[in-house]
Image 1 (cartoon, rainbow, N blue to C red):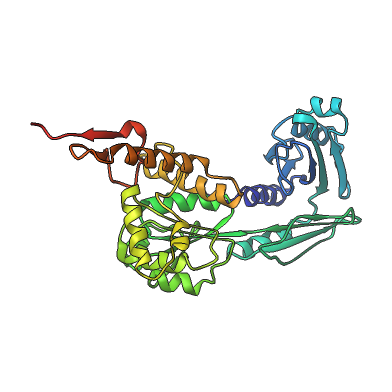
Image 2: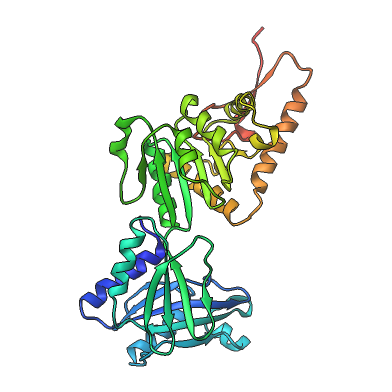
Length: 362
């Protein structure tokens, strides 16, 4: 599975190769509530077939109608939608939102092939479009690049801005990798067990040989890196987590139940990690969505990573922790019964309905 931007550009390249006229449209600015962020990309073929989106509503319909009527831009130009409340309502922009788009004819698509060569190697590419004549240039991009538009030049960076290191190469890891790749993460997989390498899809993730803790140190972890341990083997997971929790990674998680996660934190503190460092560990990993299959669990894991990346508070996790604390408190002093969960596996989270009071039979 590939990122949305790369998918749009692949369609555009295929259409141009087949001698179709193609128009590219990029969101450059938004005001108010806008359905798509700056950088969102749309490709429109001469007959109105589209790939991608810039609004998810009537804006696409209007752009397609213009193309079909032959109103193609001969050079890059700026288009505004939703300037007035009436126009915003007409084009389905919520809350009076406003969009500014750059529309450009794709006359020479060779730059797309060069861009693909770089992004396939995990490199970031900065594309610069000169508005006056449509000239395109490519250069190396950086993770902190933001879209730039000043009326004269449009600069957009393509490629994986974020990295995800997965410890373990099992079926769950491959599901996580596929979803993360579609979200423009560069996905790295480390597992010293060579027999698991056959599961890896090289178009989705890159295999890193060696012991996980060494790999964490070698890849240059930064604030754009997430690390998730999925082997369920403390010999592999714990050593990697020990280094990950000392790093600048924005997210560190590990598979396991609440009980096992607490035991893991206790083990990690024996390796001289502080309580603050072990508190960074997201365990059990993922949001509670009742996931049972590898694909469902992968959705919950990636959803939590994206939430942390986007600065969204994990209120669900806080409510679960408060519930656990309340449940434990209610059992204090009751020696005849104990709290038990329905499962100690990583596939599910304990919920109020899955906890039972287990009493001995007289």
